[in-house]
Length: 360
Image (cartoon, rainbow, N blue to C red; front, side, top):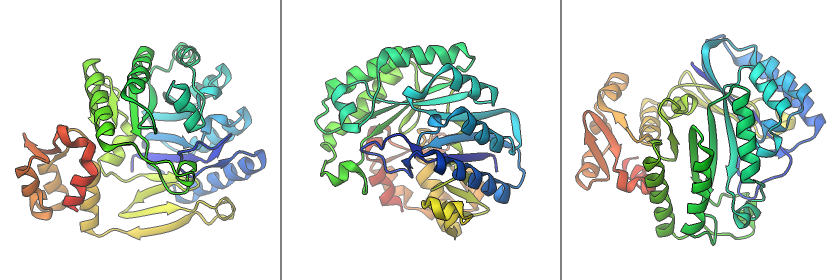
């Protein structure tokens, strides 16, 4: 066990597309939630030395200094390696000198900022705010405080968004010169505002054109495309997210968090009253060997390097091509084999889910 995810569910407002576990912030809920979070960590964490911690949400950056103090008191319960990667998600509006000083003092060395877009129409659709000059100043502040590992999120595929809008967004993102860029196309999820009001996903061909443009542009600018939606400068891959994609086990603490421990995958309750009563787990299932291998395939093929066949055999004592219908997909070039690795054809990554359905 090398990684821990901690979920802070509170937001000042709810974005139209968000289907994560979230709720509007109140100081009362925050107080009781942080107490319950401490109790959950004390009950389940078994003292392993942890290499990565990711604090996400929700909007963890909206916590006030006193609440952040309580949060990091919980984090201090966890044994960490000297070079532990600690990521903290920030809303641009929350980034202040006070916040960054607190994060820096508590070992945070990687910050993820939810930029999403600089286009007025897109921001209105998403019910978010973002300003290029403001974020430029915030990144300078973060760097001046000694944190040089920054991820910026970019969303595309908004209804009525053309390729020209995406190009402008990406150009501005690149001007900010982040170490890591995460890109997401809009998915209209159930129980979101966009679903309720009847918005639709964009045309698949246009979405593919947008994806291919992002890949080509970022590669040309020196970013390594190491996972289907993620790009980084050399040495700045997300160590925490690689825990997921390498199908390694991890703790998930907090409302709605999920984890993978000793062959069990679990999901916490999304009901804050239930959680604060100390009833954390909603679902827990012991995976069969076949199910574990399926996760290995689904997650591992998200990486552009794919899955090493020898590593798969060493873990499961079976050849991957005997466990799954690999050969037909190699024949039709959905999958590529090269130097002991099986990976999705780069020209077909945007239809990755369709390829995985053929395998599982």
